[in-house]
Image 1: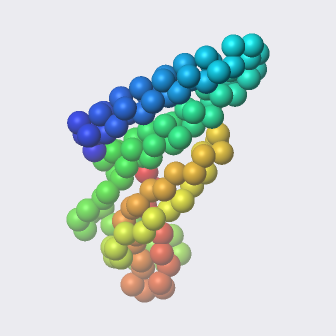
Image 2: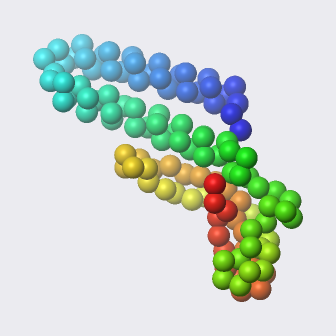
Length: 118
C-alpha cells in the first residue's frame, strides 16, 4: 500500500538526486548535454527502481489472500495453496534490478509453483 513512509522516502530520494546532480554539475561545468543526461539517468535509475517496486507491491492484487484469491494451477486446474513468500528479482527496461517479495502458491496435486500475477 502507499504509505506516508513511502512518500517520505521518495521525497528524500528526489532531494538526494537534485543535490547530487547540482554538485556534479558544479564539478563538470563544461559537460555536454549528453554527459548531463547520462549523469541524471544514472542517479534517477535507483530511485526509479524503488518507485517501481513500491507501485508493484501497492496494488490490490499484490498480496492476495483468502480462498477466493488462490489461483488455479495452470497445469492441472486444481485450486492452489499459499506456500509462504518468496523474493522475485526482475530487471526493468532501464536495466535496473528490483526485488518483489510476494506470496507464492503451490498446487497440492501436481506441485507446480507460481507467483500470482499483478
